[in-house]
Length: 65
Image 1 (cartoon, rainbow, N blue to C red):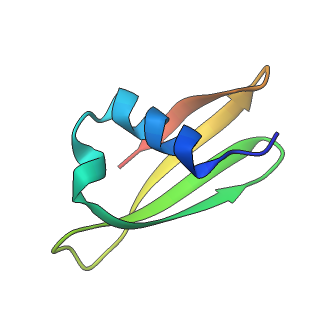
Image 2: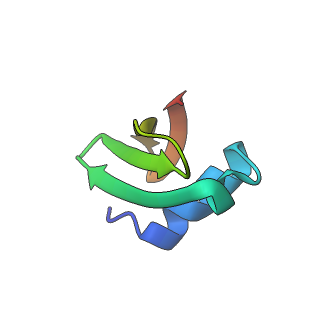
């Protein structure tokens, strides 16, 4: 299953409404079982992370910020 950037943005908005407007850059890495998102918030030096587990073809948030 390939995770499209738009799908990840939708998931971020579902779990953290309004956060996407503060993200200046994000990187997505997918494996067979997970999808990790590393992102940088405006005016912050260190990235934050979201980890989604894949279950029956869908992504479910397992760790956030």
